[in-house]
Image (cartoon, rainbow, N blue to C red; front, top):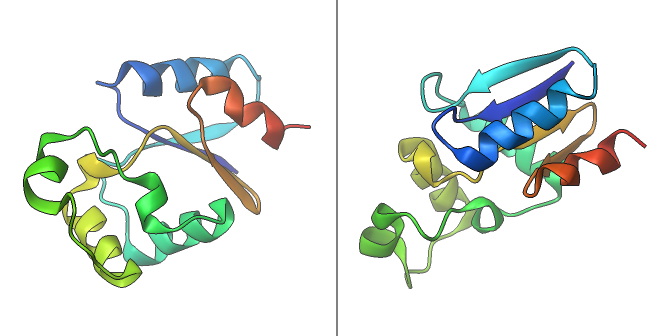
Length: 114
């Protein structure tokens, strides 16, 4: 099952959702700001993206600039920070089978369907 980690208040996330709808595939929408992602789930997403927690941080968020910018944290600490502040997670993230991508721009997800 394909999942899209989505924030309906985000223009880029809505574009990703629309692009996924145009694929005519079954998928599940996870509004991760409403339904908190678990630590296991986040680690699984990062593994499928072949990414570190710092790769999916929204550095333009005010909370990042005030509390976290320029500080050194371990990957485990970043995971806890992301779980406590899910607004910092880039969106949308598309997960399909053994792969995951940050779909910005939305067409980034196309490589998952080749």
